[in-house]
Length: 336
Image (cartoon, rainbow, N blue to C red):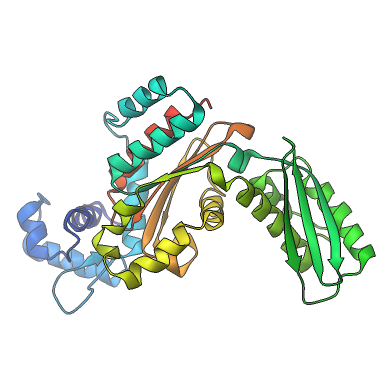
């Protein structure tokens, strides 16, 4: 837990780094921010923050930049505060009044999010995470290949072919199909993951069952990925962090894969109540390619009408502005 003074110094450093993308020195903080302490005290606090892992020196200069831990401490404090007037709210209320169709509202919401945050915005339609499974069929193509067929409660049918190193006998496959149907019937993606973590059946605890469940989730995610409304990738790539091809290309490849996006949002929101939003910073995103970005995401709607609204930007994003914008967008989409 940071002291109040140390928190103020960290916030000032992050604010300066967000604005200019340059390592921040103690003199800059003293000159530009009313910290109420001497330059020597600021230097000492920066040294302590670096020792504790909240900031680091990227090279031999005196300047420091925040680490993922520093951003996390800053964001956790930010999320606990009461904000003033939500200037983004009126923008999304106007969009809601003007839009004549759900897809149009989502397109306009995504565009407004990207414009307000200067980052990549993503709006996922409710059915992406709201679809529930009605039935799963496992069809043996060869002893090593299985066709997974998923029927959702709204009548959509998806399938994927899966290959396994070991031979799967037909009787074992039939037994597994029955067990999986008992587990996933009426469940959406979040429900499936929750139920899998609680199973005590030997059949469902097997690596084969886990692999099949993951394929079912991929079926659902891929089948409805076309209803992803995404804008602002060019804004993201204009950031200094991604100005070189070697840093931008891995991020671009990941963010263009709808399946990876679904999995990332699923992880980000797994432990989050629907009335909240989640901020996932750097390496918290689970892949090396996304270690340089942060995700601010929230669920909107209820039950089968739930969707996701999110902003993806560099870890050096303006978290306050982005959090405001995501909350306002979530409220505009709440009754879909």
